[in-house]
Image (cartoon, rainbow, N blue to C red; front, side):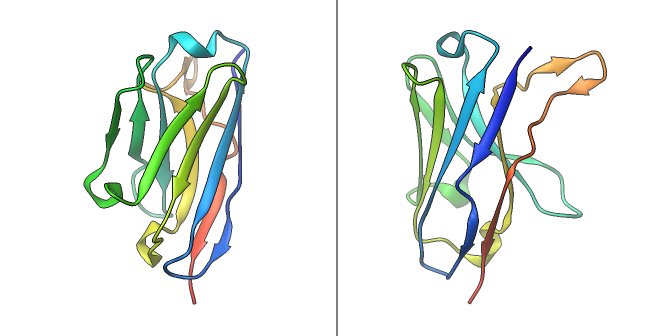
Length: 119
């Protein structure tokens, strides 16, 4: 059974930085493309950044040049370094496979980690 545990969120001022981590267990981490997603209340969840098994990365336009996704297959851990944060980056951030893990009741999501960018 897959488990994804996100951490590293918090309150940060505009222009600040955060590094999110995602510990994955229950499956062979290295064989899957992984991604960070985010969701603001009242909005749809969006894919922010993804990384393939060959370390190819893709970013949503709003994250390009500011966010960096990486993975450590020896630790089964996914990271998201976020710099130059803006208030519009405020959301709950989730990690998952790309595409997301599916269960009988729909996509599986961890608890996420809250990122709040505010002065």
